[in-house]
Image (tube, rainbow, N blue to C red; front, side):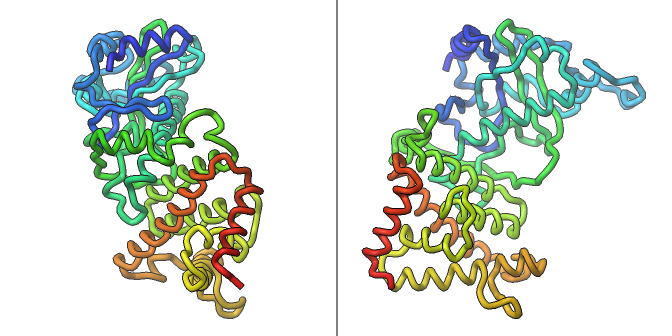
Length: 367
């Protein structure tokens, strides 16, 4: 990959370029949804591009004295110190797998950004790169196995919870940005290794039609793309209770889109995707009631009911780690089958999908 050619291409449209380290991820170059993932050693011209970063925009961390906090930090000095303390550097970028993407901002305003604005930009870039990997996670990761998840773009080895990147505008004079991620915690995967054949499968496979174009192949294609992102978010949830609730919200979206429906109605939309015969359909009816709400207001043993209305934790309902992993493996299969069918029918409208579901249910001879 020739990064100077890519940078020049972006610059012609007054766009800049961002480089984010990605921890524990594939070293086989590929592009998905406008984001290039490539190891620094495979990038032609990276050193020349990094030389355009303003050396005054950051300080080597070893040069920062112990009493720096006594200084009157504001404006650009605060930007420099804050980014430097994160540990992000040209050296980190030159040794990492990188997410490379275009940046579209007001470059005159960027020169006078505050540190808070730097962090907002950094988080936005990280999210764009994170979302582009949804189809990778859909095909190669599992809800119950967080160790296989790709690292969150912006983190690097031993970053200690800090995010970092380099940003260069169309006229050069880039900066290194770094800071702490705050908000909802997310697990960090140990990494995912994919070979060239697997990557080709992602980019040319049966779900590839929803990652190209603005409308993702149609109304249901767009819904499938959004569902993949919801599934990705659930995979990174830092507690099993939060993960479970995220998956249940995903089921509701898969069943009815943005319309509110009781889960009793939602499950009937999901089951024809999963069941192969009427016996399986009936077993799924019972299972989805166990997962959501089963019983009455005086005695309800449904998992989500107990969590939402009684304050229980999934870790209390299923104390065994093995049982919870088995549960998430099961839920991941259900979600995967529905999303896969939606990819296959990406040109459908929601109305057409519901008609397709009704036909599938009829074919199962459900009473």
